Image (tube, rainbow, N blue to C red; front, side, top):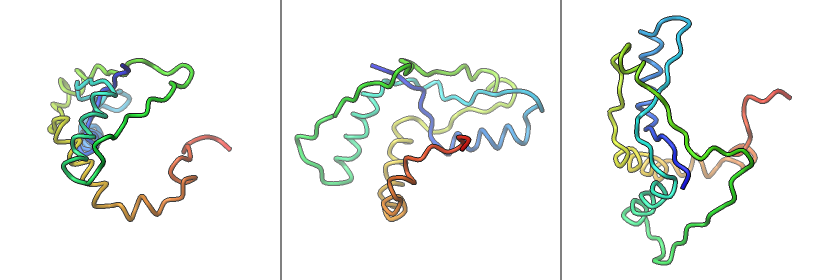
Length: 128
């Protein structure tokens, strides 16, 4: 029943641009959507989208995995500052964002299927 705050990538990028253009130097801005859904709800939504776009079996099962140690149960942000000071807010609702994201992956299958597993799972930003 873990939950997360979900945001469409284009909305997030537009927020970063707004911060770059209008944000105050030295300030911090939380970029949030105020859309908090459980992971299972998002998974079920993605399965519905998948069934409309590709052929999948009727007996698709969700495979639950054990949480990593210290895994947070809920991620949520207070994004009132960016809304108030920079007049920014999300434009894309969760359903539309999931649909657009799913369709991007369908359209770009050659890109991500060409990645080696080590490239796709490598953690970036760690010191060697």
